[in-house]
Amino acid sequence: MFQTVIHGRGGQGVVTASELLARSGFAGGAQVQAIPSFGSERMGAPVVAYTRFSDQKILTREPINHPDAVIIQDPTLLRTMDVFEGLVEGGWAVVNTRESPNEVRAAQPGAPQESGHLATVPADDIVREYLGRPIPSAALLGAFAALTGQVTLEAVVNSINGLFKGKVAEGNSRSAQVAYQWVIDHRGHEDEGAPHGIAHVEVDKPSTAELPIPIAGSPEVVNA
Image 1 (spheres, rainbow, N blue to C red):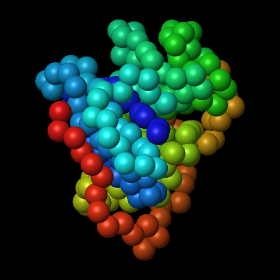
Image 2: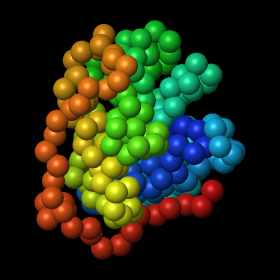
Image 3: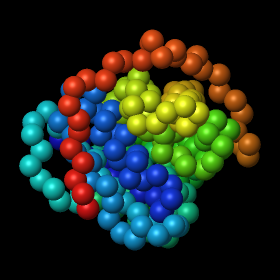
Image 4: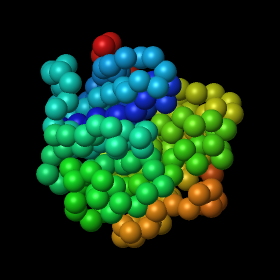
């Protein structure tokens, strides 16, 4: 079983990120579970959501205490709580920040120490460019796909297009693609952060015909 915890704040799309990640894993053939959120739902309050992948039926409904991966949607949480608490040895982390992986490690000793297991992505800058508002969920899921290989970029884009329509779908899909490419391009450069004002990352935009076809059924979403 592969377990992911998503940390963010109310209004940042944490619940949506959990569902999109579950849809993406489901498209790859996994048994999946999304537990929407625990904590206050008021705007700006810390929120956490959980997603599980397994090759067998998932029986537990409990919060995840020892995740294999964490996604940090709000960089201010790095200074206010231990977002890496319980992360398994050899675990993975995607962080929405302009800081470099080594800067995050200096601030949070619990962050993954293995080279290539921690990706920092200027997701807010990316989504402002392509979506027009700072909701970093889709960008971070693209980064998660590049970092962990647990889902494919195609599955993430397909899930986005299955949940959203029109310009919202296009902006989120593009953000996921750019963040995916950001992680690929910056792999091995763990002292390098992002400059203010993200430079454009050119990637080919797939046509609708190139996107995978949704499979039958649906992932399990557990109501908190």
